Image (cartoon, rainbow, N blue to C red; front, top):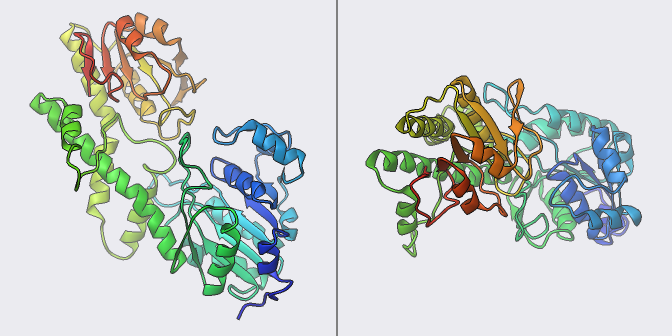
Length: 437
């Protein structure tokens, strides 16, 4: 039975919005979450180890594209939201969400360093009758196998005076239709009481909750979402390679297949997968699967196909230059769009970095333009950033790698000696200097 008094305990404080909320990690997932919790009527303390983030939040300066500056200013000015680097301030919090990074090691094993550090810090400062929700994407079992034992070192017990849930972030940066509040929120609790507390809390913040039977189910659901995308993009990329060999247009093939009103969902090829989720998350599932003695062949194969696309693009560039009696070595190649997806500034895992590195190794002089990315480092080098038409006009070939909105692609085509479009940004356009993936 829960140790929370129904009249004065945690559930009552949550339901009346008298609870003090905490969010650990103020990055692309944590800051938008903190803002939505504050907008829902809770007072929120955000904790981050980066002093620049803490100063920015307290100065009401948004550094996340999905958090409007005026919204942040209003919440900070009203006292609903503030930031600190001191975990000790979470001692007074009733509900705490953990939104810290979970990268992969070079060996493709999960790196839980930030999650473990956050859990240990919380364990030292947890008060009785507190709800903790892990949001970081991670391998199935993390919540109960790694986080729960650390939190219970505080002397609190899950389902009694500690309530632990897993609710994966599903943020899609730059998505104008779906944000933190209206993306259905999966949540699973270590016990039924934990789930009840989690639903009480997030039910006041999110439009739709999707309760599942356990943290394990919630963790697995998040990984399935991104593995689904990775595998289907892998199929689209392999189809692009096949169509190139057959001498047909992969974009035409996909658009034709997409006219089927059932049994088909279009995915599109590109220069590779990038970002913080899709290239990374399936490896959590793969790693956990291997712990059970099963080798997930489809995930491995899709990862290999997607990982090979930068080399395929470099090969297409080399072939296009050869057709014009030019070698890659000494050629000027201009990359158009280097963020991992349209309309963001994030270059994490961006395939543009791999393409640039390969071309650099082949002796090319590589430049780029991107309205969102002010600087791009590839290895030890910082690439030269040019204005779009200037860079394309001076290049032997321009390459569209990320199809940002607001770019005049027809003007780009007219300015380019050769243009390789890996995103079908010039759909429906035919020109002798235009090549497609």
